[in-house]
Length: 200
Image (cartoon, rainbow, N blue to C red):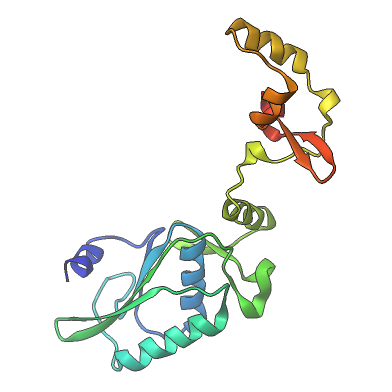
């Protein structure tokens, strides 16, 4: 029960939210999706969010089943948070621990563009297109500097200057070196400079 005591000492924020009850299942699902897409988090149901007064749930087993079904039916891809029942001073609470995972996770009925949420402070915000792309990129373990740059050709990069700079530290810069450093990347049949090459 130390975990619950610890949570009660904290304020709502990026990884913590309190809900008095399960009347608004869509809002609960939204928070779960936002937690999964951002940094993970814990949702405690049965506690007033402003005062942290412990209200409890009248039928916690029924509520747990309802929320578990709603998560399974509403969220894509499949998300499996941990749902735990806790009794605190004769009041039943439901703790939902959501892991951070590379999604993007979204509300099926709304689709990826209108149903992807992220956590911003203690609020849930609809993710814009750039944020969705960033989440997808992280899922593929591709970093920004490794991505091909489509606004520039290899001929526009001054590799001669790079060779001179490398020579100053007694290093050789060749086409092979540029490729192994990820400065030149293959995109379909073309070789393109990476964002890292542009930055360099």
